Amino acid sequence: MTPTPGHIAIDLGDRTIEAGAVILGTGAWIGDLVPALKRHLRLTRQTLCWYRPKTPAPFAPGKLPVFIVESEDDAVYGFPDFAGTGFKCASHRIGPVQLHADDARATPAAEDAAPTDRFLARFMPEALGGLAAMKTCLYTRTPDEDFILDLAPDDPRLVIASPCSGHGFKFASVIGEILADLATTGTTPHDISRLSFARFG
Image 1 (cartoon, rainbow, N blue to C red):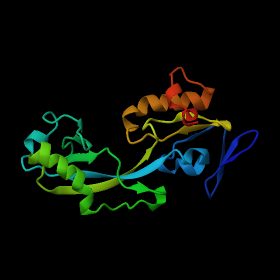
Image 2: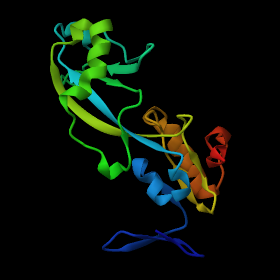
Image 3: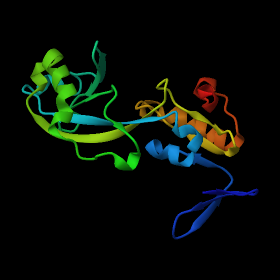
Image 4: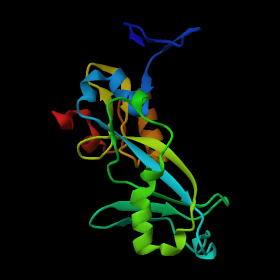
């Protein structure tokens, strides 16, 4: 990506495209494109688990709500078994810290299920009928665990859209609207002052 006076050139390897503005929504790789932001971010690898409950009926849609439970030692969220693939459960608390997104181990190990195993043993023992599947994802965390939605301080044609600290998807529709506003007009009617890059000093 090369800013020029008239446009921003984006090298895609086999071709180059030119744009008047670019939204940088690269998740855990945002620090590579916005170096001034990198020192404020912490990458963590989180494990998602799908369990086959001992008694499936209470974990079906309409019976089990989507939930998040904060206890003294964790914050765990879950979803009912929407697709017959199992009851989804994961910890929102900080997982293993990663130095770079490329270094994160994609394949989870059995011990990665320990936080949700502990939670379920205490609060939902009927869920512990065995693991059906596990996956990992990366959180890109800010110090205050809130988003950054802002124009880059050195070039207002670059819109920074990250990191979401693990909870951006729930706000995807309004975030998309804000980013479209910033890319096309440089401003938005939404109050995003608390999400500015400048709050980190």
